[in-house]
Image (cartoon, rainbow, N blue to C red; front, side, top):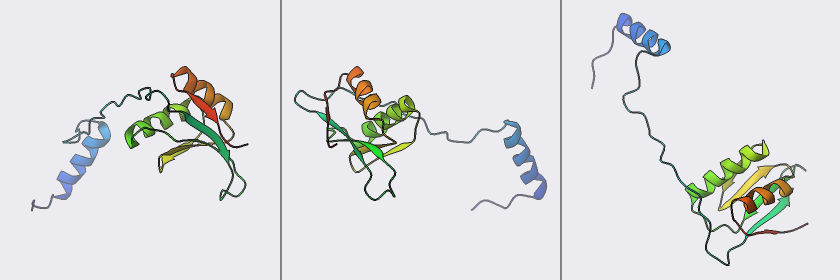
Length: 119
């Protein structure tokens, strides 16, 4: 266990951090994950849901063959292209609002085969 810091050492450390002089000892490095085109015969489905959301609609992308990291990256790209929030959970992507047309266009640009699902 490390010895406790004096008040002066603590203040100097905080001032250094605020001034950008001291960097954290270990900085996590983001490993780039590339979203690849799925195998032939796999189709992403895009739909819209309002259930259990107090009337607020979300656009969903489901039946994806992607793992969690690839799904999170694809969700980030779609959120950025749509300019809205969203999430990826349980093997599906949820984007806030009715963004079906925009999402279908973006996925097709990426080389995915896309099908509308639901209303």
